[in-house]
Amino acid sequence: MSDAAALRLPWAVAAEPAGSADAETLLREYYTEVADRYFALHENRRATAEEIAEGVAEYPSADLAPPGGVLLVARHGGDVAGCAGVRMLDAHTAELKQMFVRAAARGRGGAGALLLAAEAAAVQLGAERMRLDTRRDLVEAVTLYRRHGFVEIEPYHDDPYAEVFFEKRLARGC
Image 1 (cartoon, rainbow, N blue to C red):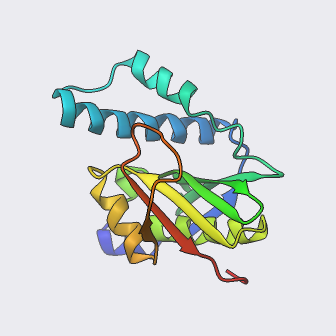
Image 2 (image 1 turned 90 degrees about the vertical axis):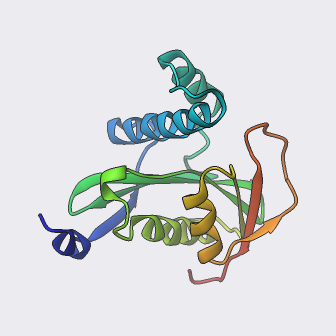
Image 3 (image 1 turned 45 degrees about the vertical axis):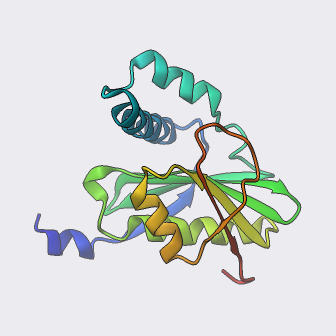
């Protein structure tokens, strides 16, 4: 399929249980990618299977479920292509978690579609703002969040891997 044809394929984003096979696969791919990039930058190596398993255990996705959260799965032309989680931190603040688009689907609008769906889900959960954290080496993520109106804020938690913190006011009717 040509790149032009792939760009025209539709994106569909829908809530899915974090324990579904597609969601678990995407979340494991997400952790693998961010861990590989971290270890490549800091130790010139890839993450081990044990480190991936530790990361999945350290950052569980059980809170990405109703009533205080949701896991969104994106499909591009019917193929599972990405995910994003939303969880409520308090009555007015949602947090974006595990935002990921598979490498083969990148550059086709999926991250933007997921982000817009996550914002809409946060509003449905009652949020007035959305926060997130990321690392500086994840330059694509930093660029995406800035492009979509997120502004840098002071840290709101102390995760040792979080280096950049963002927030965005959400409009009702997202």
